[in-house]
Length: 109
Image (cartoon, rainbow, N blue to C red):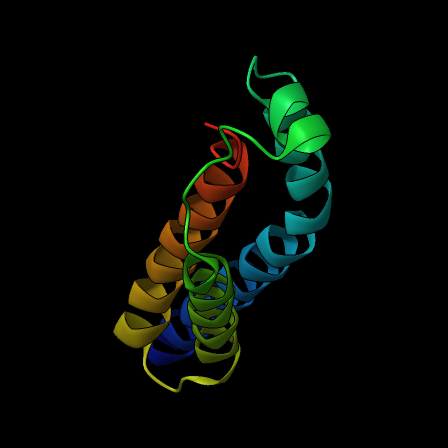
């Protein structure tokens, strides 16, 4: 009976982690829109958009790489058989998403 409770608790923890990883991945779209609006409120944004002057120097590979890492980590959370791998992948996913959002906010910095 104790083994059944442990298995049930672990299955519940796995389901919860997968749910939060998916929610985090889906919230990237509105978070990116919000970060873009914050970037547009910067004092250099108008000059960059209007005259292409004083634009930020964030490389394009940072955006693509962070999204790729976040996507791979999300898939790892969903598909990994080991609990430790899922937890680590979730932390990597959150870090990659944070990196992407910070890059978006500092687009016109």
